Every structure is written in structure tokens, then in C-alpha cells.
Picture 1 (spheres, one colour):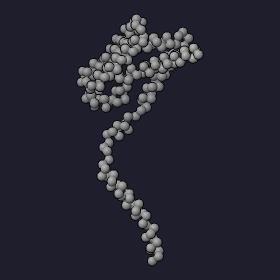
Picture 2 (picture 1 turned 120 degrees about the vertical axis):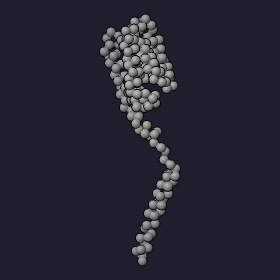
Picture 3 (picture 1 turned 135 degrees about the vertical axis):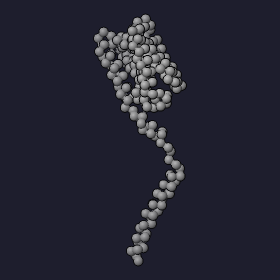
Picture 4 (picture 1 turned 45 degrees about the vertical axis):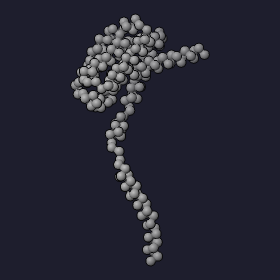
Length: 203
């Protein structure tokens, strides 16, 4: 029974790492990758301005890689992982307020800190600890397989039909009533047709 509980706990840990490892990059990457035209329109941005914001993310993330490792060795992994996820969520709340160009650049730079400085090295460290000495390959294989699977599922969802359904105007009630009347008239005409044929044959 203890072995079964341990297996379930290990499975829950790697599942949580997979979900967290993909979810934290949803705002910096997936939103603008899957909904780029809508994002540019809603935030009134040009492609160049969005590229500058993402460049700010890249520069800050590059610097954060150097400090993320020592930070992961110094603090509790659960604290760093939870803090990074909550901080990224707060950045999403700020993004929901539709900031201007400077605000978008600022929040993307902030994402560089939350997703790399606080998160990435800690994720790698915990995955290595989960694999132990004999299952390093399986640990990292499961992590990247799961993250890739979630990304593939998200990329397979096509938002175009939903957008068209929302943008198409509703059908007027008058035209619906007219179509119903026309259909009823055709049914009545077809129902009367046999009786007309009988009268003609009798004549």
C-alpha cells in the first residue's frame, strides 16, 4: 500500500510539473502565437511594437538564466514555483486591463523574470530530483513529452469558427417568419396536388 501511494504521489508530482511548465508560458508565448491578429487589434499595437515587447522578454530572460540557478539552490523549490506562477497570473490580470504600448512592454519584461528567473531552473532541479540517479532520461522525457502534448492540443483548437459565429449578425425574426410561411405554403400546395390530379382524371 505504501508503494502504491508513493507511485501516485510521484505521478502527481510529474503531472503538476508538466502542467506548470506549459501553463507559465501561455501568456508570454501562446496568446500572441495563436491570437496574434486579435491581440494586435484589441491592444492597438503594430507588429513591430509587439516584437519590441517580446524582445524585452528575451533580453530579461537571457540575463535571468544566469541568476535562476543560484536562486533555485538557495530557496525552497515549492516556494519558487508557486511564487512564479502567482506572479505570472498577476501579470495576466494587469494585461487584462488593456495597457498601452509601454505597459505591454513592461509586462512582457515582467514575464521574463517570473517565468525564467523564478521558475525555469527550479523546474529543471525538481525534475532531476524526481528522476533520481537511475531515471534522469525518463524524467526529462516525460516533462517535455507532456509539455509538447499540451501545446499540440492547444494549437489544434481553431478559434476561427468561434470568431465567425460571434461576428456574424443574428438572423432577423421577420425573415425567419417569412421562410416558415413559405415552407407552409409549399407543403399545402403539395398536399392539394393529388386531389387536383384525381379531378382531372375523373373529368
